[in-house]
Length: 261
Image 1 (cartoon, rainbow, N blue to C red):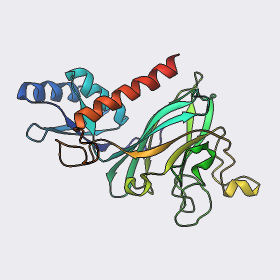
Image 2: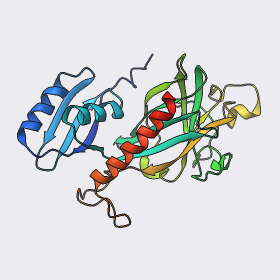
Image 3: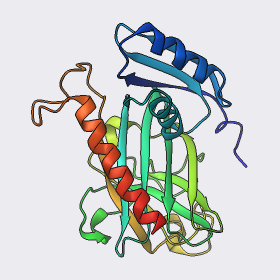
Image 4: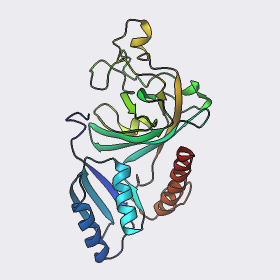
């Protein structure tokens, strides 16, 4: 069951490829009738859609894209494509800075064993030796391991996710310690076991929460839409945000195919 904090609505901002008022009206009607969406503000001039919601960002994104047959780019986000050594465990995790002290961590991971699994941000985005080269938990303040709401905890301590009987974990977590700008280039790791939040009776509890071994990981990368210019994503690639969104959709489809196979 979600905590009261995790059920709190937050504002998600998208750039949506819409060009006429009829589409704006259509989208506003769709969003206003959707459970889990409290409010939607649509600005045709700059193509921005701000949604106040308790839903996962990917669900809102899919509602917008599927209803209008268009592209929607999530703003202020980072993403991690998570893959295990044998590719059985895989998923996508997003980090969205919605307020100065609030980061939404949401995503889906498939191929897990049923039950709880610890998830963490690790200090390095180095996958040269798989998840083993990701380093320790991201811990810039040199604290002991703890739970996601503890004051004594690593910044990278995100808690547990719960996989259902089919091995799928869907989650939406609100975190007041993580800042997207600080975690770009680091890694996200999902572990085989439940995180004990530092409450165990051995020394590893205060280091890892006894959640290891590491099952799957991915580098945390800057997501499309972080830049104000809607024509170009960045000078290095020259891709428009719409081109990058189409590339991201193709990658998401690959992960979906892996899960269903």
